[in-house]
Image (cartoon, rainbow, N blue to C red; front, side, top):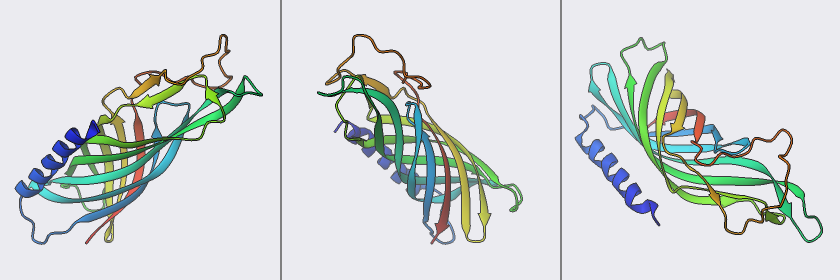
Length: 217
């Protein structure tokens, strides 16, 4: 799998960061669970869960480094014309789920008063573990696919409520992801654009809006 070398390197960087980070009074991992609205370059956005495991360390007065491994399901769908034996122009939704594992590094401004949300920003390297499309009712007039690796920029706000941290994050991919797949597609000689449907754009960047809660233990 082409994603393995990059993913291995990203995990190695995460391990080095964890070892070299300044020691804390007591080690405490953070488990996070969230839900994200994702745009994968298709007409309809989708939503899916995000699960993370990480830690944090102070790197300067009023500044923390948070690092984690996160598993996410990114979904979307595209209204598509399918060709069948009985119907040469059957309309249906081509639905996709991307199974993604990413290594995230974030810098959080902690110098603000505890009652205020803390802003943060950072980067991640993401590997596509699986690309899963719904069963098609016929031969699609077009097919799409995604690259194995993406890099993302993140910005968000986090606020502590008791022992729980509430996290609102916006993420945007930095590399072009959506690819036209010509294998198995059955292009029609003349197809009018589907009314009210946004056509996919090859090379689209993916983005995500995520709300999560984390708990240290």
